[in-house]
Amino acid sequence: MPRPIRIEYEDAYYHVMNRGRARQTIFHNAEYFELFLKGLAEAHDRFGIQILCYCLMSNHYHLLVKTPEANLGRAMRHINGVYTQRHNRLKKTDSSLFRGRYKAICVEDDSYQLQLSRYIHLNPLEAKMVKKLDAYPWSSYPYYIKNQKAPYWLYQNEIYSQLQFKTKQREKYRAFVELGVDDEIALFYSKGNTMPYLGSERFRDWAYSQRTTEENSISKSDIRLFRPTIAEIVTQISKKFKVTEESIVNYSRGTAITNIPRWVGFYLSQEVGGKSLTEIANYFNLKRTGSIPTTIKKLKLLLEEDLYLAKKVRLIKRYYDT
Image (cartoon, rainbow, N blue to C red; front, side, top):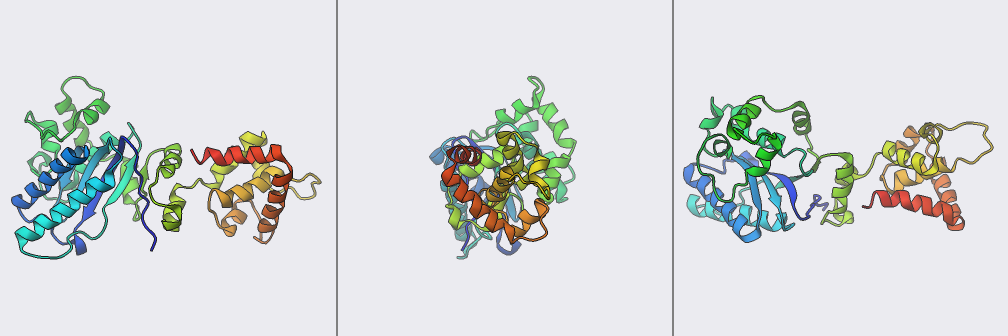
């Protein structure tokens, strides 16, 4: 069975979410909420995980965390596993609590932490659980806007620093949250199958190289989220071969010159991009897919003979491996 992509590296940021099985309630009263927060403190102490913000709802939770030790999996096994045990002991039940493995979105460094904290903190208001956001006690929002001592495991400075205000940070943060979720974040989370990364295209490529899941164990749909588009591949080919992108994409009939960059486009779209023959044919304006495998075979033979060409292609491939 395909496994979700897991990305772990030192000082990584994640938006972590999980929901009760069949949307059942996982926090029944204050005692349950406190037990979960106790688990967060333990995860901080044992695994060094840093919680930047959190919001616990009745049937799900949101965390924004940083992992200095590249150990999100171990920390989350503790958080979810221990809370399930404590929940069942208190509730006098013996069953699985969460719908499955947590979902973790890897977040680019110093890019979206501030916006994500707002998205997470606004959850009770969006769900119409409260009329005033600071009245909700089971999120880190009150610690951000009120002059009260925060838990030692709650790391607020990184969020405050992205506000770029050195004074009146609590007031500025409140005003920022009250502006509502920005369009980019709203669009990202409106997608049914949320992508496992949030950041630039370069970050996407780099993050995929940090995965802990073997590629042959990952679902094809997840792999495709990280692999470069054909357009990105063509751009790299045009730079390396010093030709226009149009000359790669569009086939000129009647030309006597073999279009090697176009052949490389076919090859890398399949090899690096993981694209289907139909996708390649559509992008390169081919009516049929039959010529693509033949062209790729010709290119491979040429790469064995032409070491200079092989080096060029290898450098383009390496661009997506680092």
